[in-house]
Image 1 (cartoon, rainbow, N blue to C red):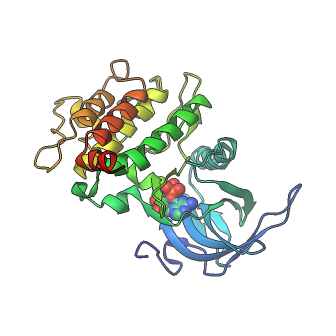
Image 2 (cartoon, rainbow, N blue to C red):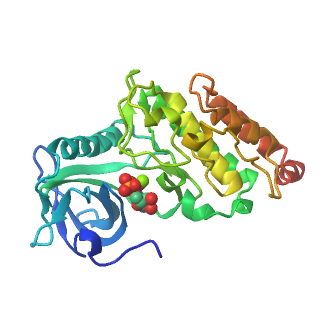
Image 3 (cartoon, rainbow, N blue to C red):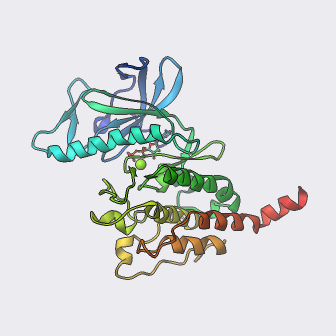
Length: 316
Ligand SMILES: Nc1ncnc2c1ncn2[C@@H]1O[C@H](COP(=O)(O)OP(=O)(O)O)[C@@H](O)[C@H]1O
Ligand SMILES: [Mg+2]
């Protein structure tokens, strides 16, 4: 697949590098790095192999690239001198939190965490390998590919996964097309809990925000965050499904709140969903739609009123 990056440019581990979970209190497991899938500000993601079980896995390595370098041995991760300790510690805590939250909220719609351990002076999270593509790769800016049936069979269960998360008292805070995988059976799986927190009203400043998908309250240290913050990002993801682009960034809309019409220039109109999306994309969190049920209802309406669903019900 084209998104697999080979070699160890940008400081990645070498092919066949061996990782071991230390085993304290748990079963010893060995993993082998195969290839690099992606590298972000905070982490490198590799395709790997779990040796004993002979299964493919994904290994995510804590590697905040502006603060660390790979040692000469090709595996250890050295902190750069002169860089702020508190920033490094906060990022590392968030990475450890990512693995712990993944383990705590097991669900068929959430990527499964297999292991988490320290090695090479850094931290690793091992996850199930999802055979598929991200929603961003799947749509790739071509909104006319999306059918009501896809929203009903794939995106509606994703909203139920989000409901499950919120019931557990967790908000994801980084919903976007690159953090949603669609497997070969068409199931959506939520990834990347690096910004997720247990919400108790205090929120806490997220580590990264994404233009177009992050709500206004995630840009402020003082603001109140909650499930409604994920609702904004979910509405932005559904906007992306319908239009193939992210909505205008919320910081621009503060001064000139003109959200482009969802169906402009497109074949499909999405009458029910566009209303729900607009209510989810309201800038002020206290005026925004607060329930995920509106999105589920809108998707169901789009599906049952679509010609293909009507054809199916006539023939079945
Ligand atoms: N379990 C997985 N199975 C398959 N691909 C994955 C998996 N986890 C991550 N990826 C791929 O790696 C990319 C980055 O992963 P992510 O957890 O979002 O890291 P980051 O925190 O760097 O954004 C994803 O967009 C996806 O393409
Ligand atoms: Mg990500």
